[in-house]
Length: 145
Image 1 (tube, rainbow, N blue to C red):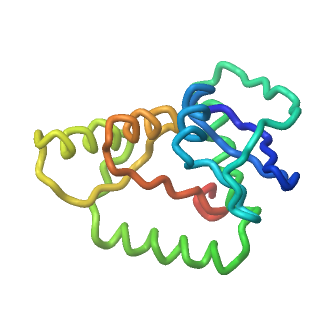
Image 2 (image 1 turned 90 degrees about the vertical axis):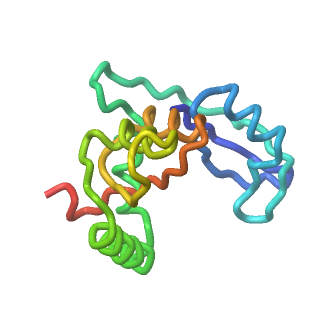
């Protein structure tokens, strides 16, 4: 994953996460990158410092997703808790086999059903690129206990 500091034509700054530089270019070309403040699609990359990551398997993108929850307003965290409870009640936990099972369901090799589990950011991006419908849900503070 690549994090870009972005600017719109009105100098509103914001960040965006992309699977690759090509992914950013493609999304921008298709009009999928827009300023969250004014909606402008005239976006450019801002000067930014490089992010250096280690060789640990989970990678920087996973850490970034895990750190989103503390920055969210409490009402958003509450809604995410409700969504997670609903998913846990109505879907099957496939754990670390999420990517594999999601692909099997998508390609008709396994029974269609709601599932949830764990996937790396790289795996989630790969699923999305294949057209598999997935929805990453950020870890909440209580998920780290």
